[in-house]
Image 1: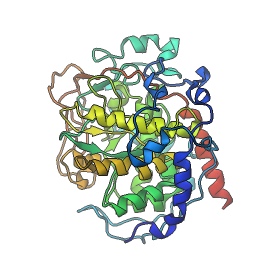
Image 2: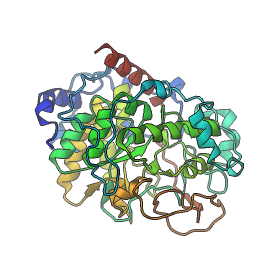
Image 3: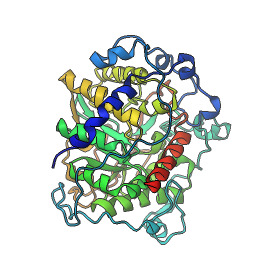
Image 4: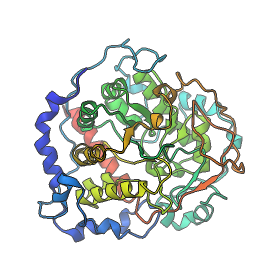
Length: 464
């Protein structure tokens, strides 16, 4: 099967225009509306995010540093959907050895929760999922309040956010040994894209196909229900599919039952679409604590976050902020340069956070970030499952071969090295592996813009 070349070629001028545009006023781009600072690992704005007009980032990126371009397009209207070059019929063979044949993409929308809303906890499906979890062993911490670390009502949660407490990643960067945060081998990039599939995802898929690359897609259940054929194409192309919840909430703000509903419905719609169930997940915004971890792992989902360097640099491109005007394309490229520079100090490989939800982030990925990574010549770019030394089949519950207990874990265990997941929970250890916090704002305005963007996409598709 060919890529998207015939349909994407006409988009290149548009993509280039999006890339070279920058915010007219640097002050406007750098300003941070405090009312939008919903989620942050640190309330202090990093100076690096405001000083990206320094060294260039290659032939294309160098011109971005001059700042002599028109203002960035800030409209949240969705891109015109790029047509898939092919679709798959029910019964098509899976690319994963031992996996069942591909299901139909004709999903009964009425059988699923409303798009982009936290699902009801009273449905028969959620009640069944709840019955499979020992709820008495879930850590007893209460749901956090909105606004994360800056919310005074979260003072107790912030105080216990470290490894000796509830290990809340959002406030301090705490991760457990059962979280996947790095690739074992140095100079290995576990590539991943969150929040799709979107109207712009085919452009990314075309680039990946042309360069014989695959990645990990952390898909939102509501987007899967909106674009099942696109998810099937991602899967059939050999990409890893992973869970990113149903409606993209900050999971620590939810009740236990709501977390189960978010993860369960996402797992279900993915299996209904591609025939297999992912055994990994990424919490939106990286918002995870021991309560969320327990529930995810009890549901057979190993958490994957992105890398944090020993110096506290989070490997987040912040590409999603371009569409909000908070950062410029040049700043995102500078973030990527900093990530690559920080990677050299690691004894392992790394996992980077990027997105395929917005046209600007996809354009940056296919015209600058990925080309620069390939041009470096010393990086292996691959899905997270394969960067862990596992075949693609180990990323799905139906085909994973290693049995791992899904029982309770201990937060007092003293394991020394990160665990590599198989097909469920690693119950042998959950010891504190604390990463230093970053000074950058991770989760500032994305919740608002994400909801607006996805709502507009749904409206656009409905009108077609």
